[in-house]
Length: 102
Image (cartoon, rainbow, N blue to C red; front, side, top):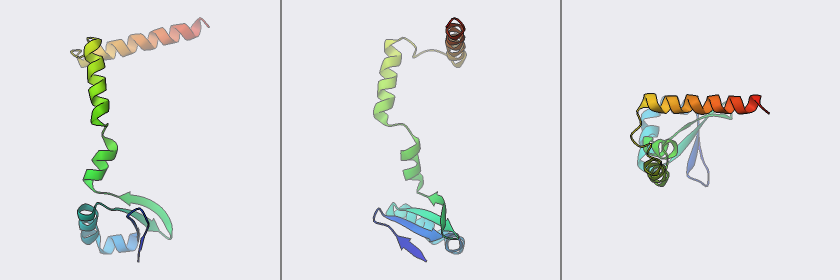
């Protein structure tokens, strides 16, 4: 059985997902819907399209632009990974030293 909510979310039993995975994957991708998968009436997982997942997982482009500008202003845009690690370690050491002196 499939239940639908007002936000375009489909609620589906784990048994139905197992039996109809291909069809449900197409529906998720083509209709930009997400599925809440229930087991014994309790929600256990969510299935969403890769496009929706990337949108949720990746930072907003505006955020990346601001970070890049700040990095250029601070002249940190050409640091290597080793240099970045050294800066982080030094900052942590300074923080620990400040806490000791309190």
